[in-house]
Length: 115
Image (cartoon, rainbow, N blue to C red):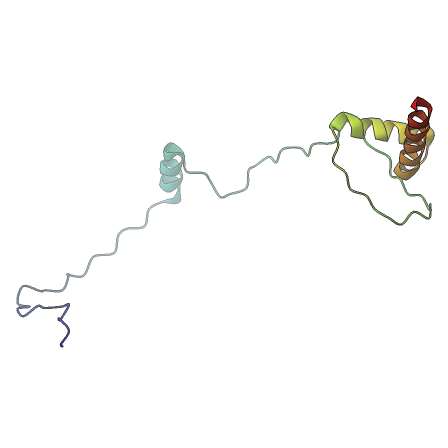
């Protein structure tokens, strides 16, 4: 079986190459900027004034303690809960692990009293 010729063209007399195109005149960059601004095309140039960096509501102090704790626990919490943990740690001047230990001890004691 023979395969069909995909270019089954016998007569190429109508075929003619395109004529050379004259190079277009360079367009001024001001005109290009104007057209792109009107069309809503975003500029890739950096903005003239960068927005100021946002700071946290309350600057937190750096906490570095040598406690002997070497296990990490990652939890998700509400913003209010994290703020409460930060406030308690600042008031007591202890690391987060100490606040957690004290809170768990109080919770365990209250659960034993309810029994």
